[in-house]
Image 1 (cartoon, rainbow, N blue to C red):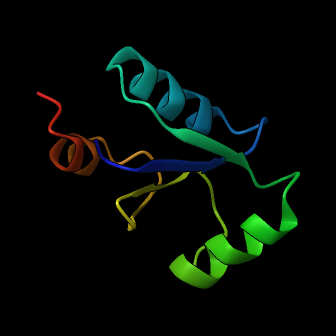
Image 2: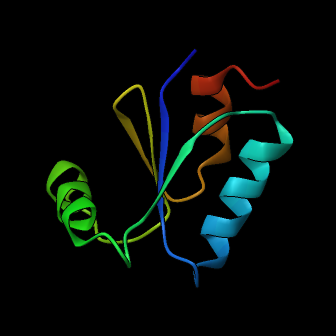
Length: 78
């Protein structure tokens, strides 16, 4: 099983779409709310160089935004 982490905020519509897409494809993921976890927000920015959400990490491979093509490829979603 691949490690999937989503960095999001409650007010982000793309974050909700990403999480809904993952749930619809039965992908288990850890959701981190960076509006409440400042340490996670700093780590996310340090690792990716980006402040925007959603960010997703699949086996430590970053995906910035809802990049469906890349997500499908890395998670083997057909």
